Image (tube, rainbow, N blue to C red; front, top):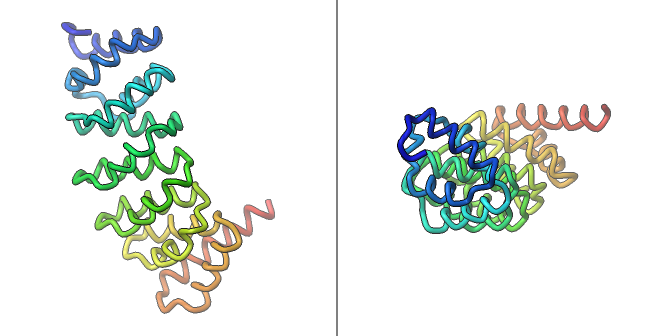
Length: 212
């Protein structure tokens, strides 16, 4: 893994991950550039294959800081997909990163962690200047069935980004009666035609799901 070409290093890392070799994971976290051309999804899968004890190393690395941006995104994805609840604080901290990719990955990971404690941080992320972060935050709040976020999500149904409006409306539709009431209010009273249309679409989809 140290001297071979990248394809060989990746194969060696995969073999070692199946053996739950934590020393090799620690080495990878220090030498993230050793797999510099691998896509984030492939790196995330590799990191997850080190198992539960490997996740503890990933949490520690996240708390200390990871130099390689792409590898840090892979760590966030791996911890989110693994539902590693002990990573919550470190993941939430990335919502304040200067790097757009990390803020998006953090919002997505928090939705996957499924922890209500993340609702306040995700509500703040609904005001992020970048629409991909706002969209992921809205989607995550829907996954969390975040009733405290109903008013904030309702405001985002009028967002200038279609994806933010979409995720905010659909999040409201799955939160429960409070969310659906907010959508009904938008349909009847909003001055924004796009918001009314999106709210109506989300309500129709919710009715279809309940009747299916």
